[in-house]
Image 1 (cartoon, rainbow, N blue to C red):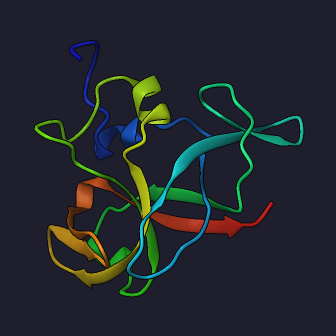
Image 2: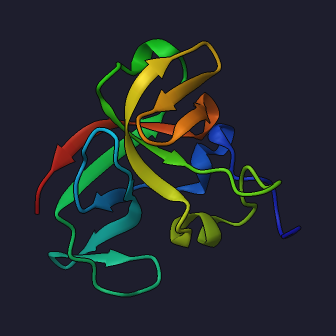
Length: 134
């Protein structure tokens, strides 16, 4: 760590223009890994330079206020790990296995509850603004 400014919601979680999240599925009560991907020459790629074979794709945006999400809706969130809430390198955020896709069970002023996971701070959540299947 110590390489740069933290990739918080104020910095769009360090994500670049054109980043989508790939997931195998969305099921209430289960978590699925959200893999940041991008499209290049009619194919999907991970930020590690490997081909991706997404089943579902989500374009996301920062959650600025709780009213932007709904109970029962899927979201992408960055799971806290130990003492590090966020990473401080764009590449690490784009290749992290801490991104997950889950379904909202409850909404509070500062956090949401994900079915099958628990409470998640709002500043780690991204709302889905577009979904597609490749």
